Length: 338
Image 1: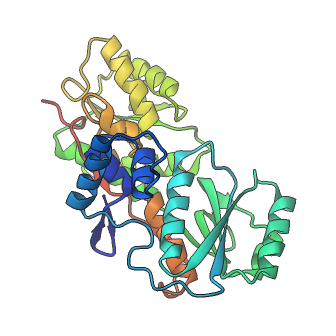
Image 2 (image 1 turned 30 degrees about the vertical axis):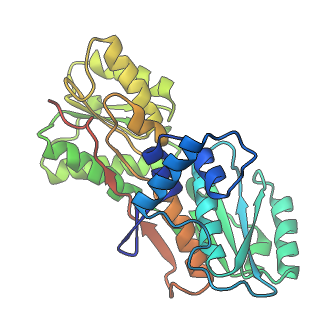
C-alpha cells in the first residue's frame, strides 16, 4: 500500500497478495473476463480481498465521460527491461482516466529522431502535455520538440532545469535504510553498490555514508564493494565481504536483486540472513517479500511519481520545478539479528 496525500492507497498488487494470486488474475476478475478459465473460488477470493482492502479500480469516482477527451503523451526510452516502467504507466493511466484523459504510451529506445516525430504528432493532436520518462534515474538532454509541450520529466532531469521533473529521493532513502540498521545495533555495516556510473547507486551510497557519519560510525572502505544490480554481483560481493578482514554484521545491498545474491552467498557459507547477518535491500521488488526471511528494503515510488506527473500536467499541483519523492522504508525481518 502506498501513501498518497496522507491517504493510504490500496493497489492491485495488494489485492493480489491478499488473495494469493497474480496481478493478471486480479485484473481479469475485476474486468469481468468470463472467458478466462478462472475458478469460481478464485474469483470469490479476489473479490473478498477487494472488499476487505477497499480497493478502488480505475475510473471509480471519475466524472461522467465527456466528448472530446484530452490526451497525455507518455514517452519512455525502455519498458520491457524494467518492472518500474510498467508500474509508472499503470499509475499514469489510472490518474489520467479519473479526469477523462487518455494516455498514449510510446517506447522510443532513445531514438531522438523518432521521439521528435512522435512529439510533433502529439503537438498536432493538441495533447494536454507530455511525460518524458527514463527507466534509469539520470540527467538527460531532452529532444527539441519537447519544448512545444507542457512537459514533465519522470525519473530523469535536465541539466538546465528547463523542465519540471520528479525523481526518487535516493540519498534520503539510502540514509533511512542505513539508519534502520544502526537502530538495530549494527555497527559494521557493509554496502554493496551498483555500477558506479549509475546515479541511483551513487546517491544511495552517499545516503549510507551520511547515516554512518551522523551516528559517528567511521566509513570503512573495506566494507564497500562494487556490485552490478544483479544477483550475481550481490553473491560475488558478499563472498568478498565475508572473507575480508572485517566481518560485517549487516549488509546493505543497493537493490533487491543483489540482496537475492547476498542471501545465496550467506547460505552457501552456512550463515543465516536475518539471524547471523542482517540484510537490507532497495527497490521493494515483488521478490523481496517472498525471500526467507522476507527482505527489509526501501520502496521506489514509481507509482506515486507517475501520479504526480499527471497531477502536475492537469494543474492539480502548483509551481514546483523539481521534486524529489520520498522513498519509504519497508521493514520486514531481514534487517534484525535474532
